[in-house]
Image 1 (cartoon, rainbow, N blue to C red):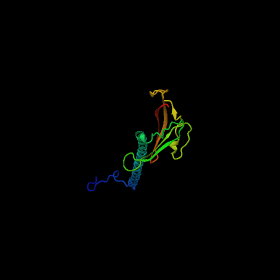
Image 2 (image 1 turned 120 degrees about the horizontal axis):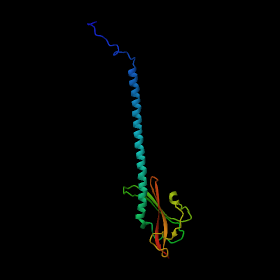
Image 3 (image 1 turned 30 degrees about the vertical axis):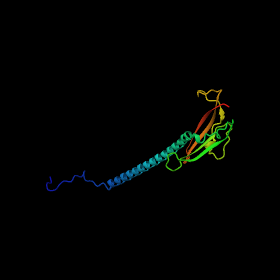
Image 4 (image 1 turned 180 degrees about the horizontal axis):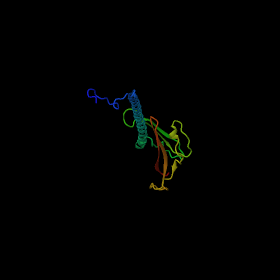
Length: 179
């Protein structure tokens, strides 16, 4: 036995020829790519969420425009607008309505008579001119509580378009005494 010299364990001390550094660099590159892709994914998700929020807000503005038109029906449901012709092609436009009172226009409102010819009206948007074809004057719907003998309805289409282009359209009718 050799007591003066320490023994070297040949199994613990080996020359690995730089393989640890190569593995460390490969791991660093992989983790860098993983981090970059995670950042890109989260950035893309934030952009998608922002676009979805904007689209939903535009739809809400258009829906608010429809409600605004119904609440302010006195401004458009005038005697001149509701002349009792069988097929009357008339319209009402209210542009640049500020729904949220922030000083900027939110929605444009277009109201026209629903009629059976489908005649487009110049000055109205494409959605406002694409209403279902129905008689303007007709009998009250079943279950409405109005007598078919004494009452009639007239149909109108309300189209509200947000300033960003989202549109919502509803049909309404008003009941009249028969003449």
